[in-house]
Length: 56
Image (cartoon, rainbow, N blue to C red; front, side):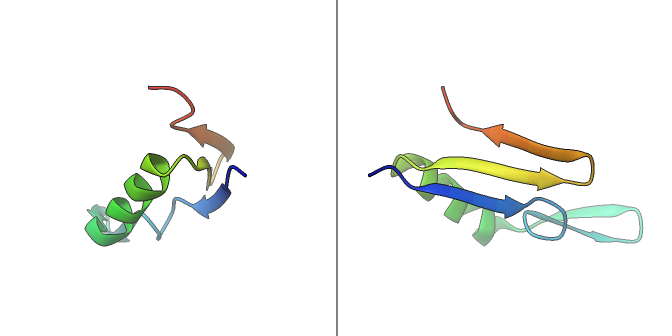
């Protein structure tokens, strides 16, 4: 069975300190592992829902 994962982009993959975005490498690496394992990934940003990594 294929896994479906939803996550919030803001303050999950990238944190902000003032105007500066700071990537979260451990979280980004986990998202890559989920994709490699065949998960369908959906992310939520301030403007709505999107899909990532359905095809390479």
